[in-house]
Image 1 (cartoon, one colour):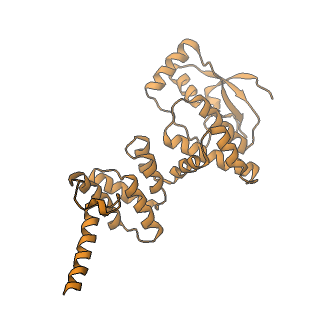
Image 2: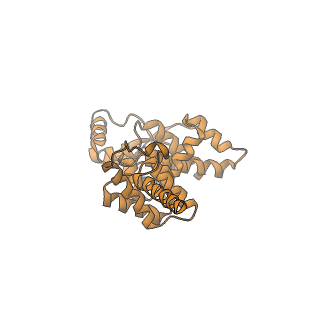
Image 3: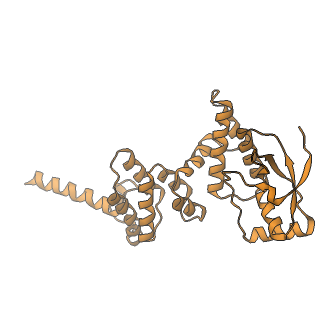
Length: 266
């Protein structure tokens, strides 16, 4: 395989149509810019030719941005002939190797587009795509699947996952809600200044599966999180109920049982 490194002008390098990895002018970029100014681009990017001219920069978009800021007109690039599927696979693999820290959203979308490219290129072939993903990522099939589930989140919920304002496991459960239902979750999280626990997120998911989920029920569950922070947990009856039951749920069951008991006594 030809690994010739070529200096290509920045204006000829274009990002892929879909690039799951963010390029931000943050503190990390400032460090990269200074490195590029002092030492140049040490690792070449990876690109392929575009039919409309120029090159699609599969890996190296942060380095390209650093060159732009440092006013360096060109950067070293390895140009390869790749079809669409192999271009996506190369883009994901190269970026995963180059980047030390990834947001949940970046990793989730990277895994999704790579999985889709593998299936398109090789078909199912008795789970070959999953086998490749597991072997190359070092993560279990279940964890890869759960990460890919995050791509079903609306952007506002995904942003909360990236900002650590919503934990990973509850986020996976919420990914099974419709976009409208997820938007309602975001609204009520803001209204009550809460974030759903795993047990609450799982309950919302189950309500969705049973066709019982409404905006009112979403609000009830999330408002309940607020109530739990105000209500002592050492109630004398808590041991008789599942841990996921809120004080309000326990009270409702007790009232129902007392009502039935009163009817029997009468």
